[in-house]
Length: 158
Image (cartoon, rainbow, N blue to C red; front, side):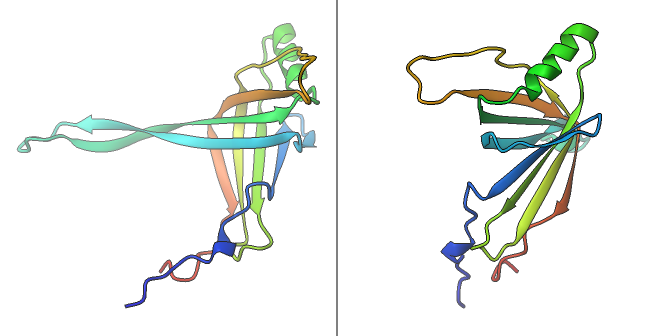
């Protein structure tokens, strides 16, 4: 029996992605400042006592979503959002859309849209006379997500 082996060209290049932020008011921004981004969900698992068993079972009981990234310090979108929150007490929600598409890989493209995102805060002002460029870490939460496009199944996976 021959074992399936992944073609190295099907590894998705880390820089071959795009990111957009869509504000609740409908304004959409290409968030090209991001150079590192990750979103994840954590499934909350609860233990379930079961009569007649010496061990407990486990059951999923909801999930929480979080995101984080690093961006070049050259935009004010988040600072304007925090300013609105300071003035009104209303934190604007937004969506983040990330598409991975490496034209050299046969897997095609995958798009994930994080819905109802919130920012956890961040840098208001910054300088570093010794730095070549400035960056900033950003992070937040989301409470829904969609996957309108998914990677193609690689040959040999089935």
